[in-house]
Length: 216
Image (tube, helix red, strand yellow):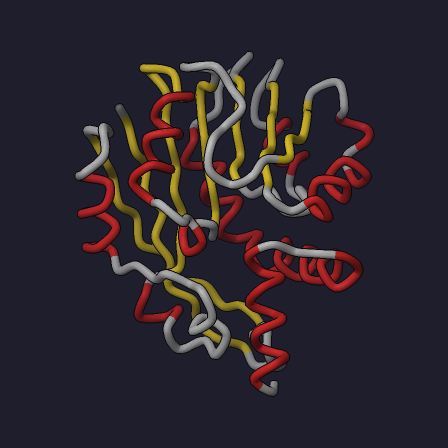
């Protein structure tokens, strides 16, 4: 891909827009499904819990969450107007259990201690102020809650040609240091590896990623 194409791809990975954004959203859902399902598994969802997903994309995986237990309530929050509408369109059958919220990417429009479980996959690269963002997650998570943060490891991510455009990459140790400066107290690290198709060509590549399970 040419430099301009890589920039457009990077912009749409951060904030999918328009028809290209819908296409990227479909690709992201397919490419990230392994990471997403591992994250959902790590949440250990129980009956009647309220789940928040940060950066839901097209939420093609929503059914996998709602099937985990009885009486689940899901809220997805995203900065992309395109993904906000697309997620609602694709998940109309679940509108009595799920809602999607559009926000500006910094402050969550929720009361303190609203959610039992929170998770996010491949969004940390785009947090403008990571410390403040973690503070917001801490604020809206219940005291007994779990936060799962999943991201591609720096060593893998920096080999991808589009990550030089406005991505902030993290090694496990850098992420541990970031979390240690927040109010969160406990953290479990699980390293994973999977085969995925490259976003820029048809090659199969080995992705190394980390699932952090974080507690107050």
